[in-house]
Image 1 (cartoon, rainbow, N blue to C red):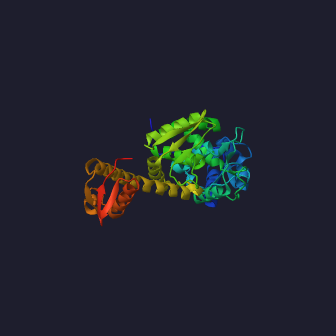
Image 2: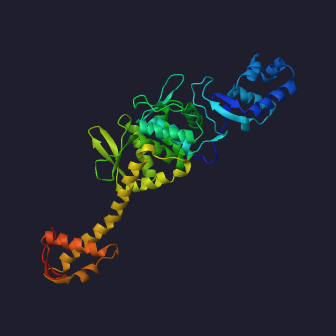
Image 3: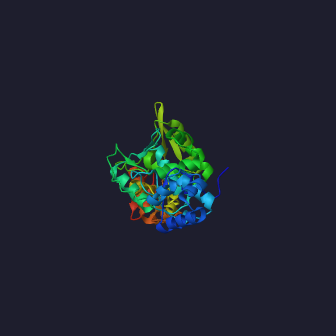
Amino acid sequence: MRITKRILIYPWDLNGYVKLSWGGKQKLIRYLISEYGSFKNINEQLNLSPYWFNNFRRNDKINAKELKRIVDVTKLNLVDDIIQFNDGAGNSSFPYVGKFPIRYDPFWHFLFCLSIGDGHINEDKKKKFTWYQKPEGQEKLIELLKKHDFDYTAPPKKTKQGIVIPQLVRKIGSFVTGLDSGKSIRNNIVEKSYNLGKKFELALLCAFFLDESGMSKSKPNCEITLHQEGNLQLLEKIGSLLNRHNVNWSKNKKLDKWLIRINTEGVVQLSKLFDSLKEYGITLLHRESTFHKKADMAKKTIYKIPLRKESTSIRKYLLDNYKNKSITIGELRAYFESDFNVSTRSRKLISTMKKKNELKSVDTGKYVIKGEIK
C-alpha cells in the first residue's frame, strides 16, 4: 500500500546534536530553574546525568535524544528554536541549518538514492556515505546541498575519493525506509520507493540515471543505456520501474551481462518524467545539458517518423497505381496529408525515386512513374 500522509522528521528521531537559538536556550534555562530550582533537581527530574544542566549552560549543542526527553517532560515547544543540527558532537560533520520538522519529500529521497549508483555507504559503525563522481558533478551536488540549507564547506575531490554526503541524508532516508546499509538499500529501494509514491519512484530513477546512464556525446543518436553489471537483479527492478511509467526499453545482451537500452520514445517519456521533478529541485546536475540534447534529438526524431512513413506510403501508392503514367508535382503534393513542409518533402521524394530509377522527368514539374519498389 502506498504512503499518502506527509512524512515529518523531528531532530530527536535521529542520532545527532542540535543547537538552540540564544532566545530558545534562555527560555529553557529560565523555565527549568523556575520549575525545579537546583541544578541537581533539574537533572534528576529530567532523568539525565548529574552534570547535564551545567554542561548545557556552557555548551552550544545538546543531544537530540536528550532534547526529546526535555520536551516530553516540560511540554515546551522548542522545535522552532532549533537553528542547527549536527551529525555528531564534533566539528567534522556538515551542519544543517534549515527548519524542523523536515518533510521527507522526493528531493530527500533523491539524495538518499544516490547511494545505489556511484554512492557507497560503509558497513562500519559510522556508515560514511560517499559519492564518487567527477569534480564537476561534485560541484553541482555541493551547490544543491547548500541551496537546501546544508553548511557544506568541503571542496570537491578527485573522482576516486569522492565527496562525503551529509549523514543527515542517510539518517533521514534510513528512518523513513528502514534501510540502514548499502546492501539493504540496493536490494529493497525499488519496493520502498513504490510504497512512498510515484514522485519518489521518479526520484529514485533520476538518481540511478544520473549515476548509471550511458549518454555518449560522440554518437549522433538519441538512445541511452543504463548499466549495473554488478547487480543485474537491481537492473531488472529498474526495468520494471520503467515499465510502470511507460518508458520503452529493451535488453542489450553481451554474453551473461546485459544493460537497458532506452529507445527514442523512451527518452522522450523519460524527459517528461524528469521535468515533473523540477518542482522539488531535482535535476541531473552536471549531466542535465547532455540529457536535454539527447531528449531534443529524440523529440525531433519522433516528429519525423510519421512524416517518413507518409512519404514511404505515397511512394508505394505511386508505384502500385501510376506505373507508366504521368503525374505532376501538384498532383503528387496532394497525396501528403500532413501540411508540414510539403514542398521540401515532395522534392525529396522525387529525388529519392529518381535515384532508384523509379521516376523520370518529362517536362517541368511533370514526371512518369516507371519502376518497381526496390
